[in-house]
Length: 311
Length: 237
Image (cartoon, rainbow over all chains, first blue to last red; front, side, top):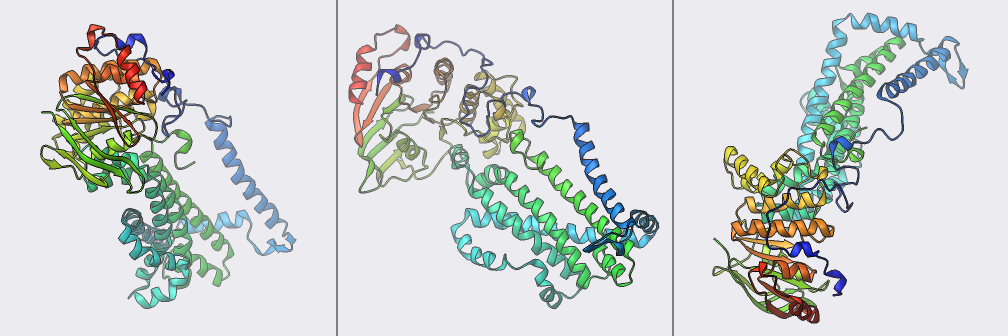
């Protein structure tokens, strides 16, 4: 060891004085994953890096949607045939009229409610089971040996390909559709949770154990909260895949639901209603994904701003 | 109540390449034992074994007649950095050992408030670790470890990542706080002056064993010339 390593100031050799209050000495080091140079005080939060206020960003978002709608209107009103045949698709005013008609009927809301119930049931079950399975296979070698081959073998099968099995397996179509939705969300949630748990620094676990924590304390105080950012990544993907699969399953075997109604509209050549169904699906998917993102951001407030899950 | 710990023919690491080989050492109850040594000399490995985070390859670590085989709240560990749970506030981190012990909320709150004040962080209870400086985070780690009323505190270069000024403040704070707790302290550092400031005894590790065991005269405030001790330790490193 060189003399240079002996770094205490003379001041430090004074006899045990009272502790001085903490200096607002600010951040010096960047070794901590949760202490970037800028993150010492909430008051030091940085403005959005890419310029523009909140209002301007919302204006850009709205303009993006309006531009897409305007393009649709131009292509359909002019009956454009540019290899793609827009002349067979309804114009915005036809769609708006059909939407207005549907919004006044009870069946529209029953379909909407039915799809939402299926999503909430399937996705809710998948969230619980996926997080539990992800933690289990990441934390237990034996559980990993038992379940990982099964998970990896079933994971590549698209959930929608399980429709025949679901029809055979479950007494009612309703249960089959929830099952398909569950399977769709289960795998992304499990895989994300598994990765998030494996990526946790062992230091946090060591700290809890040396404070007297048992295995259950490590799970409760370290693994679950520490994995939340990754878990919410999986929940977000899972919600998107759930919608794809619930709509597809409804189109194949449903009796109600937005997917069923959209397909029925196609078979009776009611194209404006098909588009109304599509827009409804888009809005429902957007709303539910936004809800997941919102909850995710709430429970991961501790992350430095740039790393938070969600936009 | 303090804790004495005895290392009996302790070998850590692997058979062919032990980090520490057949070491014997008695840590006295209530003393501050500082472990120094060059990088790779096994300081941190020894501390992890004392904490119960690492099983010895051979030999035993004994505390009050019982072999240390697992972690225990009797032996709290303070790490260099990043050991605070980043999603918990200062208060919530300090309350953690008390939550683990299922203390009622009122008692937890009171104990946490007291310890946070003792390390000079009153008013910062609701802040998250990322909102604190390195020195403040180490104060929280100290409060969290001591709130659990451990009988021994194991400190792994806790001030190693701090600048000289903050490090000096933390050393003074540690000495002040330890006066009240009477816990046995085993403190790992590579800084010889830090060792001489804090220690009752200094253990110098090297070549897989104990190179020297040096008594440091007390009390600390006599302004004893420690140059000779310092030279002796550096020679052993």
